Image (cartoon, helix red, strand yellow):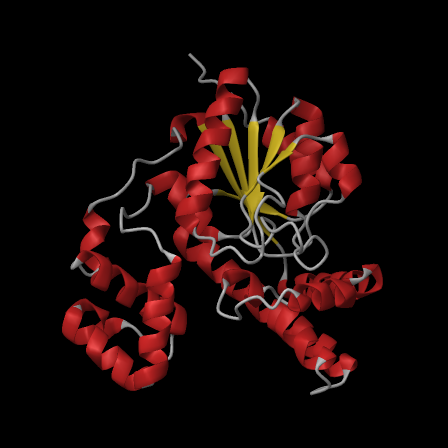
Length: 307
């Protein structure tokens, strides 16, 4: 007896063509596209995050795209809560959920659930940041290790992780690693889920990344970055790390030429794509692998896997 597929996961590195495949599959199945990219959640970053166009969003229902403000301290846990609600809604409506993006931790959270560690708060983040600024990175890490010995494995220079570890242990009295055994339930029924990773040869992917960044620039990426930084967001927030934003900020401040900013943004994006590919290769060994190609043909192949 066949099992009805409720969800399709389409993952892969940036610029590998995931969105086009998701669109083609949605057209063929009447499915709804659900975002699993940590930068495409932000409403102010359509261009730099390579979000679907307004025309694409008008043609096919899209969920969890552009719904957060860049000044919000967004997290995997918040995305998972939102995704849980969307997927339940689509299941009740009998609509296929097509979850696509490049954020591996989002997919991992769907499959495995998340640690139940306390949520981040503005007060907690500020307290952790102030303590780190006062002590310096090395001394802050040493004090963190005294509170939570398992944090010795963290790099003192890894600001985001050390701040989060400090926030958790000072808020709860329990180290971050100790929360790993207390997890939320997985969202997906894997028996009703098709999971696909799109792969692309490195030289081809690099060329696509460079060409896409040029298209972003022509579409107004510099102006989008100017508007972003005019909001004076905290540079520690996740949105501030969107590829291209740090480089464009230097160009806007006159520290480097625009050409140098573009070249560095392309380089960092290529490096990011390599890390994504490595993550998916190591963390999703049982997913179906598909070599990037014609989007309609790939969508047809995925449709053939549906129960």
